[in-house]
Length: 174
Image (cartoon, rainbow, N blue to C red):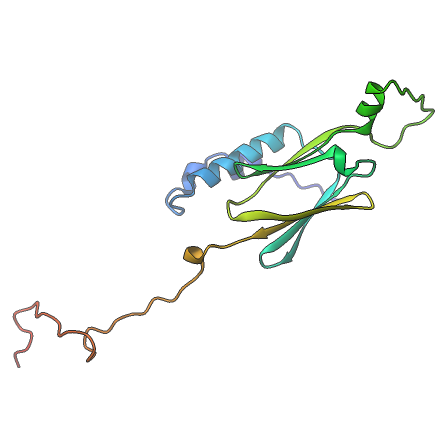
């Protein structure tokens, strides 16, 4: 088996190289660099999750949250960051004075917080919890002014447009 090493500093090290190609993307590039820094520190793996593209503008984040109820989960969106947090029932049991002694504990029972950077045009449409799977439905709503449009090219020689003003001395002379 071959292992591949990705040099993240090469990918995100000098983002100023992109300035001449992408005008107005400073905030997005900064968010990508910040996400890279956060990922480089520690990549969390609990709880496991999937991100699926349902169609062109719809997505779903599926997260395995077995053992968590609706009352233990919190979904929040602020400043382009979707945060999903879970408070463990173990904390509730300790607060209530219940103390189980496990012979073997293989089921993760710990609180978590997951952050997802999302575009400004993405909205949360729905969230549901079924059989230990949390599904958060997202939709990318593209405003009318950002949708593609065709620009009509006017012909100055057409009959509907006013006659063009002569700009050169030789125009109109034969």
